[in-house]
Length: 622
Image (tube, rainbow, N blue to C red):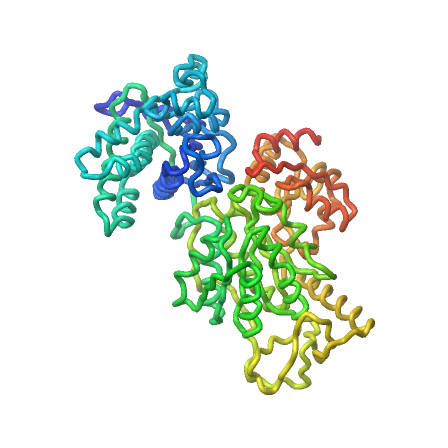
């Protein structure tokens, strides 16, 4: 926590207020302790308080992992402050540990002199043995010297607070997360009302649960106000945002709302076809709500069926979209090549996760760039776009759809688990300001000299004519064809068609903006990033700029084709470093395409890169 000044003592209470400029909290407990819910509610009320924020939910892949074990630990981290926040934070100021496993898994992330709020009820012999503690760590004097430890019997206090509610012991146990939440609300002067309103709406049909959780929340808040161990409360002033209406949004929701908005603005039907897979499933769950906006959803029996349905929708004149993660994309590959050959506008969303194979399903990674760029047989170029922040999913999916339709091509959209689940404040756009020109497919138009693969002279795209147009009966498919759509094994025709399809993708560069450089536009060191590493890289670069280093930052949202001016930028710096959550895939492509000495800095841990490590790496290059 960065302190600004000490406030005067609050009237009538023996508690001091301190003003801070930024804080990071991590809620941590057993999978099933409601840590994701506690974190999301803290995020909600922090948004209402006017702070900027970034979040990082981290949870096991198993629906019910072994209780009170480290593999079963679930956590939710939020970094908030009175200024622009780019990352969920490297280390935490406050750690809420609901059991010994949560403490052991997370204590190394707690800053020196940080606050540890521990549910002492769960530090019993059985739970301690499960994670290898021979003695109770809460009684370890060295821990007390390093951290400010607040032992709270959260389970038993919750039970006492709710003893007259008529709920079962199991239901009462489930409310302990709101007791812990109440303590943190008191600590950071949060308003309880947004969470109270949320609970009453959530449990509208079962008000007994709403009132029990509210009682637990208020009991935790009141408890924090009375104990001597908590001597301070904290205030974080509002961040300065441009005027507008804001909401918190995660990446998958922003992506879904972008798809809905594209359907409204284009007045075209959208069909999203998917098969359940972490962390992409939430897109399907969100889109199901918007059938009244011309958005249709289809849960297929497998990944191959899902992409085939999306291709069929595009063939029929709708915007076809499919979404999955790495293993699912691998299954879709052959059908994606069909869309390349048939030249149909399909958007393929890949919410990347740790691989290969099923890997670590709930952990983040950005190792599917090669898969998107090269993971198909034959010469099969496909444009690739990647958002930088959770909210940016909204605008960039517009771009993906526009490119798909204008150039009659499948388009890859690469998000990842961190962007999908992480959230930030998002200013609601004015829909009248959104630009979404799109050429609809021809149903009954008669086109002079029509041939199915006759191309627009500027974009090289073929005309999107849908079945039912009696003037232009045509044939498309996976076999190579000539301009008229006749199957062709002519070597000259194949050579020509391969080069035309490639040139079509390269011409997309005319529709994408020139790359901007943050910091120095030439000099010693250029940092190139893409995807969810934006926040930590930008923060680290800004730190070195403040120290006077000659450093620039390029964050790529268009990965195929690259922006037109990228080569000039790359060759304006003596050194280039590319931090990635893979083994250097973008660095490999930059070296091969531009013959520049791009050096990779890589970590593949299932977690975002840390700001502090990047600062040290970048500084070592000077």
